[in-house]
Image (spheres, rainbow, N blue to C red):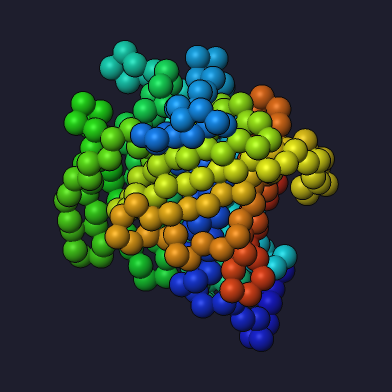
Length: 280
């Protein structure tokens, strides 16, 4: 599909912020908080990691659209591995804009992450951003005893090394897969925290309904979740977030099948187009 010169996007910065937020929410957005609230009891949300739901390689493909116009695709893969006698899950994500957009906005982003199979505690989070001429690499390792992220950030020719004290936080990837093990109930609200590369966020996930929806010709029984996001650092994406909704399958897979986020003009959506078994 090709669009002529009259095709105009909202400002690239705002549109990419919206897509980033949608991806952020689609990945689960966050995980545990030191003050999590699941239902009416202020306790940590309980997952089902003891069942090892990701022991088989999984591949999921998504398409991102703006007002029905396809903009980008994402490929997400997870597989188990063993490192120094400990079982981990490794995730690889690639996201890129469609070729017709390259003259005005070219994105080729990659994410790599690993987390412990028993606890979902993160080990490593790598985000390689390639957006037009922008080149940013964020490599973060979680120091579990010190409860801190040790980060190397390379932006163009400028490099920075720093640490971020963030007890009981997860990166978006380990957060997402742990979140997929939660037992959602209508009316629940879950408060979560996440490390997002250089900022910290608090996310409230409100489970508002159970709905049957059709995505790309397939019908799903889902939980509808309305998130709210807040900056815990001085800066972040929260001020760019408008109303968003997430639909997660109500079966054992807890698969994110659709997300919609409002932008200044219309909305951005991500829909699952294919799920299959596939190694990294």
